[in-house]
Image 1 (cartoon, rainbow, N blue to C red):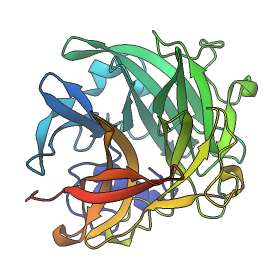
Image 2: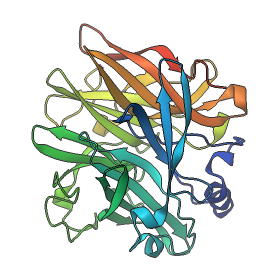
Image 3: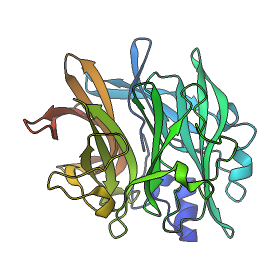
Image 4: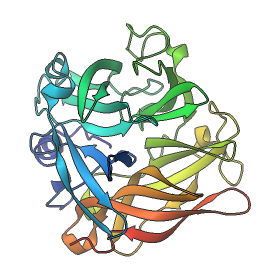
Length: 336
């Protein structure tokens, strides 16, 4: 999710992120991929009103969601979150992601002030029904071009290797390998700064003109699909967010769109965009329902509810050339 550098917009966004652009309620924003916890499908999403992260239960059959509780900052990052949010200590975190095995939860801790911009991706480990602190994964200061910005994490496995994709409009989208148990950087984990040992971070997508963030990697049929958001987020019904996709034969790329243009050169094939009352879709995740059936989830701004940020879900189909298409709307079919 893009953060602005306007002090007035920042103040409004920190108090009520979905109020920017006229939205009055933030039910779900920057959702993780859905994960199964017991009998429930669960999505984690950005925090608000003092909660670090939100937890939402997903009922695809009924076309509904319901609240599933909140996670607190001191339970996820008790030793360090306040040292990141020095000027705006909201205790609210952004853009969570859950690892493929469901054992790791990553999230962004952000602050902005006279010092500039600071982002940290942290991790927590599953302990039964709870999450235990796991420390800092990557950290960045500022948003200069070419600097990997530590925001919007997502996990993917390639064989036995665990990878993290992350980044933003400021420096583009990057890929780095993690230790599959700890969730820390595989190489030099005690040096999380993205400005150091930059060879650890591989650039895989960028679009300086249109902006880029909220990346997700999805493996299918021996190929890797990189989904990214472009346009403006977090403005309610004025948001211009859309999702584009590229494909590669190896996880490190190069990622090319349907026309063969590299995502490093502003390429991308449109996958999701405004449709009906679903405005500014973004931050996709995938549910594997078995027998080849897949669902993509995303947040959007609801034109029937004054731009409320909410969770959407659609079926995914794949054409003969191996490119995805968003199909039938499953959420918010009956969401009040």
